[in-house]
Length: 134
Length: 355
Image 1 (tube, one colour):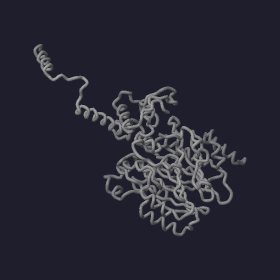
Image 2 (tube, chains in turn cyan, red):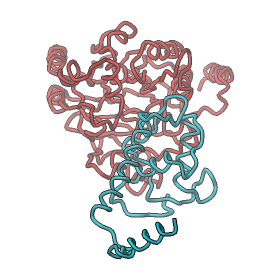
Image 3 (cartoon, chains in turn blue, brown):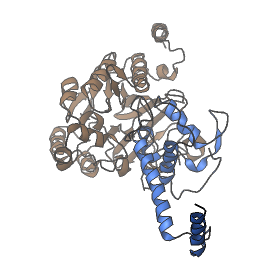
């Protein structure tokens, strides 16, 4: 066992040194694809066409927000007058899931919540950040 | 308000448990003298079936409220128009449920076809409930026309989709790139020409369609593909008004002799097309937008309309729960419709800014 570890260590040293901040075009393509997949899942959830359903009544996000319009991701976090404090976009997504969709909150770091935000942002490409704007 | 009508109003309001109906609803309802008359306009309720006898409560409430309020109008409107998209997916269950809620209305009602009513069975069951997909009628010197403006290409309608349910689902997504542009179509345009052939050019014309008979944003079908051809048929008439649904927001415009007005949805509001930054759109510059919606008030940015036909022009009063009533009236001085409170740039308020 000890020999095996030593051999592996020796092999690592023999490899060209991988610098932490170096990445290839291939890496970037892979990461972009991961984002695109997330946005794609987000779109499927948005139009109620994913295996997981956000709500219980068949209402889809897209019914009020075609192309994720009127979600204004560039303005968050911002003071949300209905909540009475500065809120993040995901909190508002959960508000919509609970109310018009009559569903249950997603956790902030769930795959679905991240996918929804990826989709929302992808439909708002090129719009300047405007944090706090009402 | 006469003592009787006030008493009736209060009685009805009490029965409904509606303590805070905007009084403008009543005040504006006084009939003008002469040939002037009024009608009410309810549209885009999107009654949505869940399963069994369950329907989406929010959309049901929007239509029920509009029907209850329209029944309180004093004096009574001459008739009601329903502007289309009574159903969400065009099923018998949805159309029946919508028709049941509408049956509480105390007035004669004319129905316009919406794409959500149409693309499951191409209007077959809707016709049984509500009558022909297009027709005309005369009322107090005005010629009214109801069009089905949500038709589309033959291939898309009859050949592209494996099932009727799939066809309906594809058309029901407003932002679905698999959708298809709306049109009135050649057959109906021919009918329209013939229908108008016998009408004097001085007769006021009012057209009801579901989609705008003008081109605003193709991506969401705020659009009718043969709009120019329909406009050309209407052009010889001196006073023409087109009233359309579909857009779930306030829009108005003037093209030549034709005034265009949209109506609100009872179900939910839609963003103005300029809110979608990735595509180009053409909201009429004349339009002062409705206030941005506050979703925490379930009925905010929804509503219904009360219309006053005065010297052949249509003035619209938007009944907006949780929001200030808006009136868009024909301005004889400018020859265009205008908002009576907000039309001037200096009069506009921050909630009317959409981005």
